[in-house]
Image 1 (cartoon, one colour):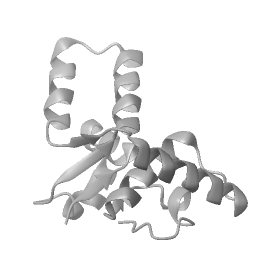
Image 2 (tube, helix red, strand yellow; image 1 turned 30 degrees about the vertical axis):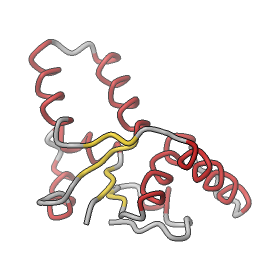
Image 3 (cartoon, helix red, strand yellow; image 1 turned 45 degrees about the vertical axis):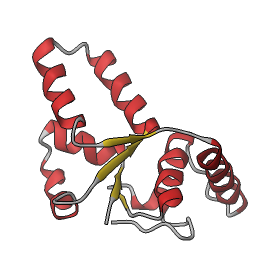
Image 4 (cartoon, one colour; image 1 turned 90 degrees about the horizontal axis):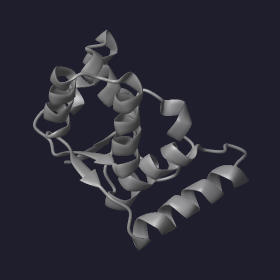
Length: 128
């Protein structure tokens, strides 16, 4: 089984935040993926924080363990449906979260997140 990892979980891992331990069992011996949106969010975080070379290299090492899923027509359609259905249910979802959810939905694989409440209203999405 593969997984999609949300931005928050990757952030916990990189920062060595104790909350990362909550997700360790889901991240061992499985193919791990992130949405292009998570990749973009993390790159923005890196630039805003003005990291030095050493910290950037450690970050690259962490990212090398994750495949990045980029948008195509199918993913765009799932994103649009996710966004629309969330609004209809009175549970608007952020643009970034909708891309991350759509990635997991497209491949029918679980999403590992610390923000369950952002995603729990989405039918068919498995959350770890």
